Image (cartoon, rainbow, N blue to C red):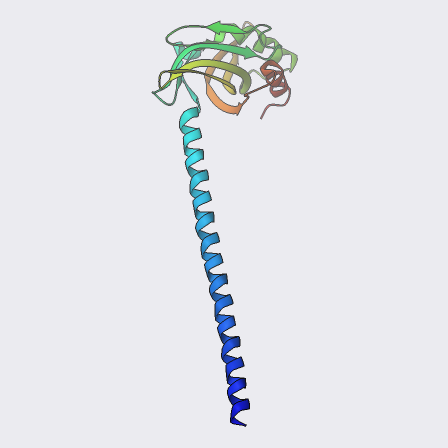
Length: 199
């Protein structure tokens, strides 16, 4: 009788020992997996930071109104970025050719687009005074950290108009707002599409 009891106790301890061994293996496996996952997350984070550092800051332009709204001077928000040249692509209804600017102080002149905007306003039977926005594609070559980079983005130019008593419209520029980055594809087509469906 006592021999049978001892055998049962032996089996019981063996079973508990096996359970403890399995639980230990599971805990070790989970610990290894957690450590491995943390290592992968850290490696991904480091790779993302390295990629962002190599790409630099995204170029974002801001505008300063000059000459009573007859010109918008453009400059990067980030002072570490230095513009070398810009090309402006307007909707074909506004201006049927791009404008290239290679200057220390690039900007948009109202004289380039005022005639086209006035025609569009007349065609739309716009009221005497008002304001609206028109898209422009901006291709910018700039320096950052000693490297030449290119940005292709669409901005919206804010403008206002007043109808003169003797006819004609006076158009003044008010500023720019970022609309979208357009890294690839036909920028002119994207601008024409934005003109047809303004945001």
